[in-house]
Image (cartoon, rainbow, N blue to C red; front, side, top):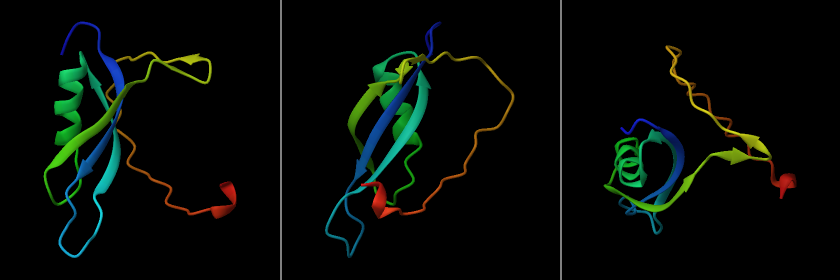
Length: 90
């Protein structure tokens, strides 16, 4: 990793698992020194059954007017995911 790590959001896709008609997709966040490293680290986080490919990568440095900065920590990553489907949000 370079001296200046950045946060990337990576949209991964994978070949359909047997019995499915469409690709599986997942968004992962990674810290990397450059785009090539971000793609490699994202593929390593793939949770699907088949080999992933990268559909898109975005550097996340500002969100809603807030600058994103990274600092080393000993805290563990949160694995909580809210899977509540709320169709009225559309």
